[in-house]
Amino acid sequence: MTELLIVPAHRELSERVHWLIQLRWLAIIGALITIVIANALLPNTLPLVPLVGVTLTIAIYNLCLYLYANRLDKYDFSSRYRQSLIIAHVQITMDLVALTLLLHFAGGLENPFFFYYVLHMITTSILLSRRSSLVYAGLATVLFCGMLVLEARGIIPHYNLKGYRAPSRYAEPMHIFSVSFALASTFFFTAYFASSVMSRLRARTEDLIEANQACELQVQQLAELNEKLKKAEEMRTQFTLLVTHELRAPVAAIHSYLKLILDGYVPPEKQRDILERSERRAREQLDLIADLLELGRIQQKAATDKTVPVQIDEILRGICDMMRTQAQEKGLAFNVEIAPSLPPVKATPDHIKQVWMNLISNAIKYTKPGGSVTVSVSQNPNYVVGEVQDTGIGIAPEYQTRIFDEFFRTDEAKAMERQGTGLGLSIVKRIVEVYGGRIWVESEVGKGSKFTFILPKIS
Ligand code: ADP
Image 1 (cartoon, rainbow, N blue to C red):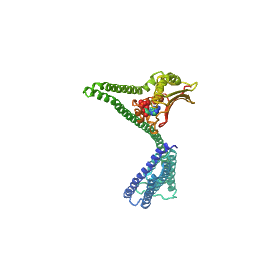
Image 2: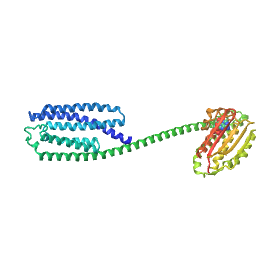
Image 3: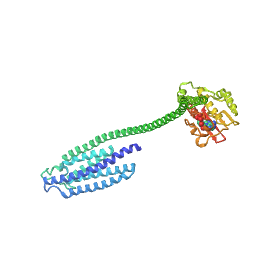
């Protein structure tokens, strides 16, 4: 039996074992009251000592069962189930024996309370399997019929309810047979029907529990998704704040420059200089807006533009001359190494061009004159590999992942090159990742950096 099935079966059984114990206390009180009333109605007829004795015995074993059942909570699932099963069998057997004894001392066949066996059959079917219920129906039949036969044969005494039934009736074979047959068939039918209903109910409960577990799983998944959404929302808010801050700075600068001129604080000979500064800040802001637009469009562009097989080495060749000129103007050596027969990658050519341009112009920007920039393309079994290496200022280890964050610039980079949006590497990273690739940097401060990106090959 799987854990899933043990859990409801166990819960049901141990709960019902407790319930039956509670019910038995009521039955004991009911039995005592019945004995008192019967004794008042039929004075000097009932053997009070054995009747009260049997009732007290029931009370004693019920107390033992109560104490034992309460200890079960300490056990684990499966042993609790096994122990509850034992308690159920013990109490049903004891109850049948006790009922038979009570009936025997209170008139045997003359006593109409023999129908109480049927109640036991129902409780048995509620607690146990159909097979066990039928076995207990058999046991009840044996006990009741056995008592009748033994009494009729005089092997055990018969207690006649004087004034209630004629003493000869209990010995009439026909009467004994008809009552026994009617009762035995009632036992078996009750056991069969009640256990059928119970087994259906159990199956339904198990279905419900399974459905409930599936629901709980979905609730958990939804909670996780919700958490992710919250995080995404938080990141979006932070990004918006950052963007607003970055966009505000150049506008504030331009505003204060213009105000100085308008308020007459700038002499005419200095006005051109201030206007040039304003124009520079305006250009910076335009660059920033262009980069921001670019960043926002990558995903959309990758989805809508035609992603075609792209030779990234060809695209590199296309921009090489322009980049070489820039490098040489700054006094840098510029080397290109392209491996032969490279396979294509799936991307849009514009995006690949942007990756190369951003990485190479950074290398040129952050390398002092006299240094060198080396660009290479090669392949490994699954990817086409692009590398841009320089002998520039380098990046401290603690910043090597942060440089890919939006707007992040190191102080060394700001000191060397005032102009920069801090968005170039974020754009590159997003492009590479949108096509299933990766980018990383290896760098040493003062010695240089090597940016490597990989894109899946189309074979
Ligand atoms: P920007 O170049 O506009 O500052 P990027 O996003 O392209 O923005 O780069 C982010 C930061 O990463 C740079 O400010 C610089 O600190 C660092 N960085 C990028 N490339 C290099 C490089 N080749 N050498 C040293 N630092 C670099």
